Structures are given as structure tokens and as C-alpha cells.
Length: 464
Ligand code: AMP
Figure 1 (cartoon, rainbow, N blue to C red):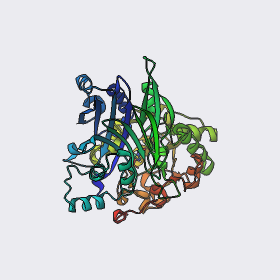
Figure 2: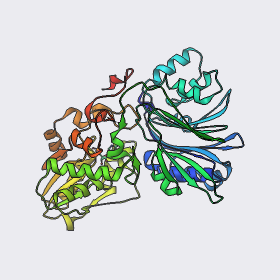
Figure 3: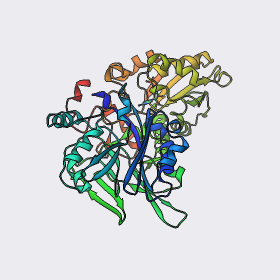
Figure 4: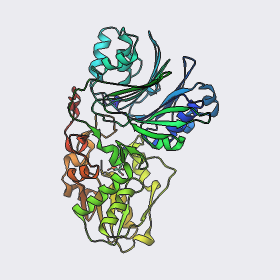
């Protein structure tokens, strides 16, 4: 079941003479949301053209591939998942030829009842090609006798449960859909063209708009189906199944880029506030505050500002290495910390340091970092985490490990402190985190921290 676990970026553009190039740049800006595979589908005179491959955006799309992706509309996707050999088939956007015409779907999020839907459809004779949850949506659209894609989406949304932000391209429109609980972000923008026209843009994060010179208009609302066609913009609703929202707080903590606006909040400002509140909650006397780069930087700035303790870059990061966490094997991961992070002994020698990171998951990275900091001569190492203890896996699209590997699910804060070999350890409280995002637990999903999963789990709870 965890084979369906994706974390991804989506992008969509309509009415742009350079649609596929813009999609390429939009995916490039959102590469942090998934590094396993990438794909773009463009629309040229009612026909769809696809180019997809394993690897990073810069490697998947040589210049000639973008020349081939002709047309004035496109959608794109980057993906990281835990699937193995069959992953070629899972590369998105997924495409199909329906009775109503061609359709391409890019999905960010994870459907929690995909297994049930798939089984039911297979019993009725449906043939599945891939192992991802997104294919369920294509089947639900295909089996609907209506030729109206918006109606088909409204009806499909009554069957699928979980997290979904979709960018969908048909022969005559670009569609953006966000699930009623609003787990994953999806934003709408506009790009002014040299010929005086305007193109419409969808993306997971606003950092994609900045790169292509698009203006942010608004979020696609939770439970909204937005689309643009030759007659302009339209909006419809999915019947709401809940009176709460479940925006993923982990987007603010770690996942999104700090220069993005997510759920109408500046991610950078949220992280700075998390650091400020962390300092109020568990301040300690020390000579300097240092971040684990880059994920701990904004929170450290907030912590240093609030505490008045000087901020220093005590650890320098080699930027030519990917995120260690997402490397496939534990041995590469362990080695990765040292290649990636280099503590500066001239700064740390004889000092009492507060080290800030955004989150602590398995604890293995923190332990290695603390050892390196001590080897560099630090006298005391106080570890501070700008989020609460991670105690549960995510079923809604963030690639957290299984519960058995989450150290805070099994050990107390003091046991974790001993494991990571810190002089002291403190986490941000759940209330503090909610204050930092100006939210409440009826607006955000914080299930990885508080265990309150906002949907039924359809058997996935076996993993808890
Ligand atoms: P560890 O506690 O050794 O598992 O690793 C903690 C580090 O992983 C922190 O620096 C986080 O920034 C980072 N991290 C947390 N969650 C994720 C995630 N879902 N994907 C990639 N990195 C993550």
C-alpha cells in the first residue's frame, strides 16, 4: 500500500505560446517536491503530446523534447515515490483516451481509499497499468457516461477520499481541483504575454510563478474545481463532506520552499515564527544559534532574534548533493551527512551552541551532526526542533517513514536526547506550531505530530 505514497509537484498553463517551456521552468522551480521522475503533456490543436522520464527535470527534458512538446497549453509533474521496478509506468502526468477525448492528469497527494476503489473496479473488469492511486481517477472518469468532464470530476470526488490537488488537461480546457479538506496546496496565477494576451497558470507553490514571471492571483479553494477554456475562467464546487479543513502543516514546517506562499502564508515567515516561539518555549543560555542548513535556517533566524543570541553559520553545506533523507538506502544516507555538512571549528571551538533543525524523524541525521559539531570543538550542544515530535506516518502524500522508524513514536524526549547525544533537547509544542501558522487544529492536518488523522484510513491504520 505504501507503494502509492507520493510527494509531488504539479504545474499547468493555458494560452501561452511557450507552454511547454514554462512548464519545464515551473517544474524546475518545484524540483524539491520530487526528484524521482518528471513529465510534461502539451496540447496542440486538440491533440496531446507527452514526454516523461526518470530523473531530475534538467535531465529528463533535453531541448529537442521541449521543441516536440508543441502547443499553447501544458501540464507537468515531478514525483518522488517509494515504488521500485515498475516506476516507469507510474510517471505522471498519466494520460488516457476517453470517450470525451484525451485527458492528462497530474496529482499531488495520496488517496487513502485507492486500494478499495481499485479492487472494486478490477472486479468489474478494469485493467490497471500502474500501481499508483491516480489511475483510479482516470477509471472513474472513463466509466462515467457523461461527456462533461466537470460533472465527471464532481461525481468522482464523491468516491475518492484523501489528499488531491490535480492539474488536468483535456482537449479543450485546463482544470485545477483541490480536495474538500485542502490537504495539499494549489495556486492560481496569471502571466502577461508580449502580444498583450494573458495566460493562466496552476502550480503547487508560488515559487514556480516567480521564475516564469507570473502573478499570484489566489489559492484554488478546498473543494473547488477551477477551469479555463476558450470562454475564459470558471469555477464549480465539489459537494463538501466535512466542516473542517486539513491543510498539511508539514508543508509549512519542511516541505515547501521558504520563498513560496502556501495556504496564503509566507513559508519563510511561518518558519521564522516557529523559531521565535521555540525560543520562548525552551530558551537556554548559549554563545550562538546555528541552523542545520538549509532546513533549519529560517527557524534559527527567528530563534536568534527572539533570544538575542547571535546567529552563526556554524555548519556549511555542500550544495551539490541532494537531500540525504530521500536517498534509497540507509548506508548512503549515513555517508551523506558527512559529505553534505561541514562544521566550522574556528567558529564552534569552546562554544555552547544551540543547533536548530526543522524536524527530527529517525534521529540518525541529528546524531551524526551533533558528533561532527563536538569533533569541531563545541563545548555544549543544545538541540532544538522547530516542530513537535514526529509520531505518525503520513497517508496524505508526504513521504514519512513507517511508524517503527519514527524515533519519537517509541522514545521519550530524554531518551531521544541520549540517542542523539545532545546536552539538551526540546521540541516546539503543537500549540506553538499552530500559533506560528495562525491556525487551529480544525484548519490544519497535523496527524504526523498529533495522530489525529482527519479521514477514515481504509485499513491503512494497520501501519500505525
Ligand atoms: P532524521 O531525523 O535523521 O531522520 O532526519 C531529519 C532530517 O530530515 C531533518 O533535517 C529534516 O529537515 C529532514 N526531513 C524531515 N522530513 C523529511 C521528509 N519527509 N523528506 C525529506 N527530508 C525530511
